[in-house]
Image (cartoon, rainbow, N blue to C red; front, side, top):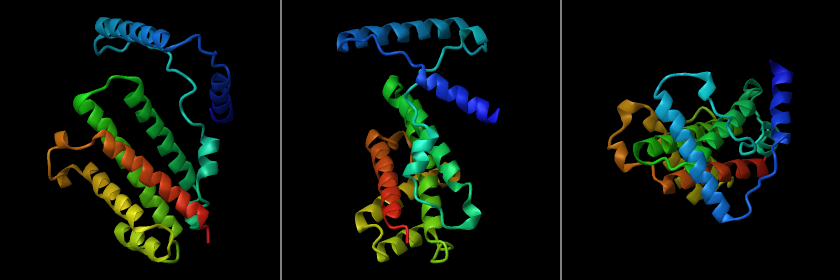
Length: 211
């Protein structure tokens, strides 16, 4: 399933047909038609599984693994030889969540939970990057102590530290017993953007200083 599976995925990406949409009016019409057709399938099947009702997921949206790996800093801890693979998988999963948020009209609690899971993923990515980057120089410290160490080393600034610490606090709410306020009041579009920006800036900062 290894190489042949990956080759199949690459072939599907390369075989994406050019769009026949000419303008936003075409776009709106096709989006409505697609939504209506999907609703027909859902209304017919309910919660039943029927392979004949499985639609082809659109190709061409998700980032491929190679470019993601190229953007990541080299790992320092010899035991972390699989870390960047795992980070790339997490970021590809975040792409899936992004597709749900911007290509559908998902609302309410369902939307909030997709944002929550994105935040948890990105928090895990940042945790791992700080731990690996400080290998031999404080990697065993707590997360917020590590972000403080990055500030002292002038790898990141105070503002990024604030956002990374916020991201970690939000990520810890995946431990349901630690949640101290209603989730209905959390996980907004602004939170989603803030989490992505913090993760992106951390990756860029440590890659720029590989020493």
